[in-house]
Length: 163
Image (cartoon, one colour):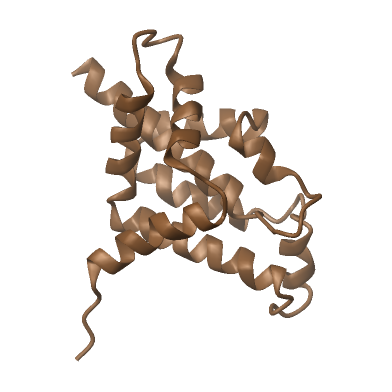
């Protein structure tokens, strides 16, 4: 009988982010970027705690693992055309990467959506690195996923600080 091991899913999510060059502290810097004008006393440590809480959600883990796997398959040329070309080249009108990221922010309400749109447009910090098309790795999904994690943690902070 099938039984998913939640601990393995959670640890694999963090492991895959790290293998793709993304650290919790880099995501925390995005959270600070999003929230500094609202909460000037916010620390990286506090942001990291909220990121960990976001990453503990199964919906988030599913999106992270799915997006990273699609990026890896595109790097290996294992997708069929024309999908291979669209993901490999981060086609501008291919919006499935943003849709997958929105499944993450959807857990955290409308503030998450606006935060995501903002960082997705500006591409600060690690998002600029992930969006660079010069390297061997494909991050069509990962840049949006990381932005969504930061936007969700930002939303989580806003909700808790207001309460």
